[in-house]
Length: 437
Ligand SMILES: [Zn+2]
Image (tube, protein in one colour):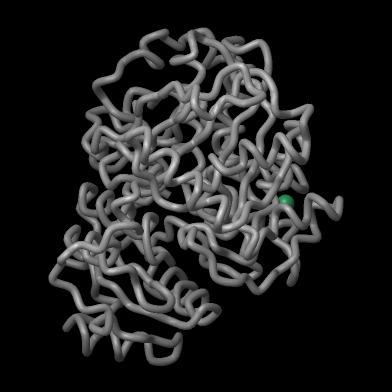
């Protein structure tokens, strides 16, 4: 395993990848399919990157949190890959924290972390900065992801930045704006049926050595463990911009819960570094058409018992999934938080309310805002004090049809068995040759 590549090195304080279920500490490496030690046919646990924070604490400069010029590269001492020159960054992060007195109700303050201002207009840029950096350090030439939207666009942009190829596997008919954006960054797009896409991706990862920035396995609950490391910087910035204070409650829209868990990990690290003296309660908000996390939370389910639902349609297309993750459930439990669902009507009303205040967000982002009043009704004790809400992506992506030169039908449909042939026919290159030479 390379430890340096093109100016990239592993963080010397990184001690390994810790399984959140069995506790085993794995060596740093390309462990992108969850914990191999406690994995079963029905269950997989997430791995969390672990640092020697005790020794890191002494050498940490205050400027790590206040240098707003460098994007996430400023946080390199706390991220897995040291990108000393900042070359892989697109100046993501450092997004504004906006006061929202019009949403306050039972809370003393409500703050909106406006992630729509990121380079590809969603908070996935944070995830992809750290996930793609790790792939680049490992010498991978192709990044891949199952996505029809934000995750695909961010992977495409960051792969391009790192000199890697990018293949995005979507399901259904892609939203034209999202697909056009991915293509503009040079991504190759294919489509596959819902469960088939995991077989396709698995083949790409295992046969071609492509680097997945998201989940590619079944049972589906994992994701690239280097990704939430980017999300944790949201916690650093909220803490910094509240005057080095921790909010009482943080609301995050949830699909697989990598964002929810990543932000929680950031607050945990701030506390362990001696910078924060308390922790927030984490609230995951899902559309009620699915809601696997909220259902597991209500049922008091053990971390090993995540259920696969068949989700209905929702306006919040970015988070309309049928399965969540062990790390999402653990985050809600350990933080003393909550998981809830909101209706499409509540989501659209929240989006309209934000737009009246000058903020156009995607429906998935409005889901977390809708969670504020739902939380007040369901758990009044949590609806107090200072709340921070993560607005994950821009409304331009799913709200406004743009005139773009893109035909959704031109994205070929693949299965695991015919993937190589279809890919060759469509793109003129064998997938095994992609990124080579
Ligand atoms: Zn394990």
